[in-house]
Length: 295
Ligand SMILES: [Fe+2]
Image (cartoon, rainbow, N blue to C red; front, top):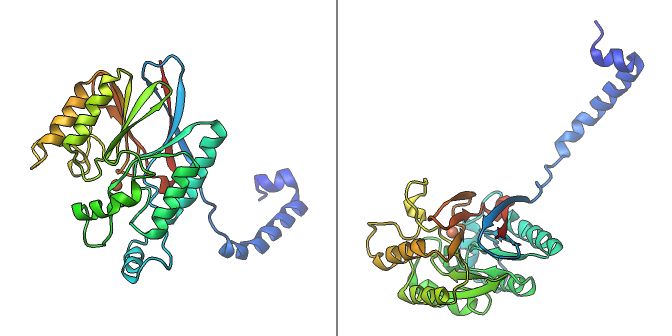
């Protein structure tokens, strides 16, 4: 019985195509999967500006450079961190920068620019931040020096001098874009200090709409956040300053958005009556968010 294909193309053409397909079949063993294109999710946030503007929100590139200037223990640590798929962080960082440049918009990176502390990582990240005008805040991995030890305050103290010229928000700073104050701060260890809380009050006094820029999402009840991956969770030990800060931010009507990362998956939810919280997906997976701020 003739198939539909044979009916349409005729027997001779059918046989020709069938033999071509048979010849090509062994070549499939040599094929590779193309890298998926950058996935830019578009979100609009009402913030009260007369002239709308956009930014590209990226997070968690986890670049993993290492070279001969880094010692053996750093090399062993880097090797232990090898993960399938994560090697694409640097590729997608380049793609995101090209995308933003073509649109004439700013890149804001909410931390874990690099996977671990190495001379090569810091040098490359700092050069990209500087030459591409990226606003970057710190994540927990910006302070990660040793495989077995995470979130060690002394590691943070040792690394801060190497980051502070290029990264913003070490521990807090304000970047003004399009008539909005972007308050960039370090909550990478899921906590903030009194100095950060005081800096926030100074920004509030300027009276402009505020976007909070940090790595770890600010805790919000009943939206399905993981308590272990949030900042300002009620009832956790020794975090009274942090809980008070997060609730103060929630009450502040000038705060119109919070942008964060850390979860490696996109999230959007109401942080308060006046503010959306947007968590970017992982850039090493090719995910990022173009946010348009509107009236
Ligand atoms: Fe993180």
